[in-house]
Picture (spheres, rainbow, N blue to C red):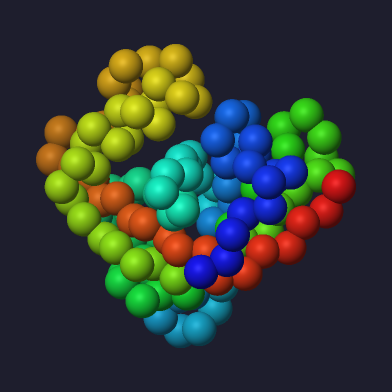
Length: 132
């Protein structure tokens, strides 16, 4: 497990920075999606709905990378490589609501589909690279 450098923790805990999440498709090609995230207990948590591309690419043990750019300084960023270490629907609805509060100031995620099942993924960092 890699530690997040102290000088970059603000990008994970204080700022409304988006992460570009890179996953690997079944054919081996990369796929990148901007995502909301949070950081707690040494893991990065992301959330999506079952059936979406990133949900199909994210499973326990999957290797991923995230690039998180400082919204106030595009030349300052952290890249994190890691492994999905947990996948759960338990608490995923509450998690997406907490991300909606962080990113758009709304108590409830406004784009939830009527038959949507939310999934939360925990990513344990294995390596980091920083700039700025």
